[in-house]
Image (cartoon, rainbow, N blue to C red):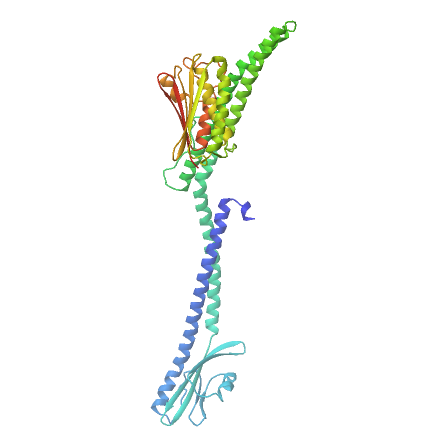
Amino acid sequence: MLARLSIRWRITLGSVLIAALIFGSALILVRFEVSSILESSDRSLAEGDLTSYVAEIRKDPSGLVDDSGLGSLVYIRDPSGRVQLETIPRAIQGQLDHRPSSNEQFTTRVNGTEFIVVGQRLATSTGTWGLWAARSTASSTLAFRGFDTVLLVGGIALLVAFGVAAWLLGSAALRPVTRMRLEAESLSASEGAPGLPVGLANDEIRALALTINEYLDRVRRSTAREKQVVSDAAHELRTPLAALRTQLELAHGSFGDAAALATQIVAAERTVDRLSSLATNLLALSRLEAGELDLGSSTAEELISELMDAVDRARLVALPREVEVLFSFDIPQHSTEYRLSATSFARILDNLSSNAIGAVDRKGTVQITVAQHPKSIEITVADDGPGMPTEFLDHAFDRFSRADDSRTGATGGSGLGLALVLALCESAGGTVRLSNSHPGLVATVTLPNM
């Protein structure tokens, strides 16, 4: 039920409930103290009624006690057991006739009225006297009932006032949140648009505004990045799709020429392979960024096996260009584990080696080296091609980026290979860097041990 109420109502009701507990406890304590004070007052008055009689008896223990018109409710019995004075109600007198003399206090009720009775034992030269005085608590009870009414009305008034104050304070405290909500409805998702205003006070509202603004920045960057990816992907897909359409049209016109038809089909197959590679790399990048791709783990021995397979694939790719692919590895600890599956390790090697093969001239050389260190493993792919322009090195890992003037763009690359390598390395906790070796380019991947 409370969960369906607004925060303002929950603050108000919670405050009123806490105030009711505090006020209730305080009022009960005050009521108990006032009751004790009134009871003590009645007892003191009853004791005061006996004072003059005690003084008279001490002055003349053998004489008669005179009421002297004081009008007090007393009961006095001499040492012989004879009652010298009785102005107390008869119902109470019956309780005192055979009661031994003692210093005591008790309450009794007569015809619906409560009396407090105080007894005093007085020792004299003629013997022990017993004195009792009674006081009606009717006036105290009446005053106490009036006090209860005041407490009840005052307590309700305080709770209402506290509830109103809690409502007003809650409204004032939540007013910035309401303003933030209204401003959030008008926020734009475009990058560079202003965020929520941040107040000067160092409070929770400021922290919330900062957190929301940081989240908006991330969403805007992600949205801008996705728009750019879609735009780049559309641009990259347009050329191979146009080429595939042209190749299919040419194949339709070559039905009577088997050799020409075969040429167009082979060309179309290469275009389809490029489209498939582009789609595969885009999917892998998206899954990596979304955290949906499980990198798994592998041992150094498994990486050696995958290295051999990757070298074989690279040599098949390099065969038409007569490029020599060399490799070496130094892995003394075969049981060391790395936070990267053998399949992901193969993707890194395939992308780096295919880039290197496409960059070198005919009969060039590509060197793949894997070296194990105490806390990491390092993969190096070096070629003897023209290298990259220095100003392009910082952008080489961007999606769909190519340095066509130094790294050939005629090999059908999608421009996603290095972006995928970077994403895989960072997900595994590693790094990748490019550097020119004059001649050639060196790509270095470092993956930490698990």
